[in-house]
Amino acid sequence: MFDCLCFDFDGTLVDSTEAALDAFTRVGPAFGCAALDRAAAERLRGLHAREIVQTLGIPSYRVPSFAARMRREMRAGLLATPPVPGWTETLEALAARGVRLGVLSSNASDSLETYLARYPLPHLDFVIGGAALFGKARALRRLAARERLRPARMLYVGDELRDLEAARAAGTGFVAVGWGYTDPARLHAAGAGTPLSSPHALLDWIESDAFDDEGVRRVGS
Image (tube, rainbow, N blue to C red; front, top):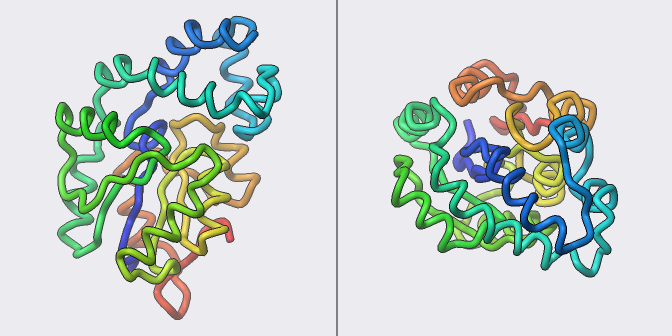
């Protein structure tokens, strides 16, 4: 059993696809991006975040400002979007097993706090926001050091290839969800195993998975 489970926010705890598409219609033109229809947006799900910004034609030096604008524009849409059904019960069950729980996200901390004030999720021991778009590995390592946790005893739950890469770099376990920004087939091909079909499936995965002799199976490693 893992000692600590960390959850991504966008695309994991919250299905924020609609909020992201709506925000892009306002942010994209300022960065020279063409409009996205549903088919084009679905094709982007098969790409890494770096490939997405390249496909959209956003220069690398403008990526931080693009990401910041998107997060600001998504705030209202997120507040109108409840968590994915099933997370409350899943978190309750995990807490009953003595697992520490928390959020680690690229979203701003104040945005996360505002959202969780409207949609309280139970038993969150920490909420960490502001991780750089491609800086989650460092954030995971800092969390492990701060909480005196062994990375191998931590599990990161996310929806993107960059989440998988961050977990690998930090030495934590990883499991993917299948309803987020990245296509489940691409996640599977990258070594993330079979993405979860629902929050409840996380409990089944933890209880039925084959763990190593330290008690951890590091999916995607």
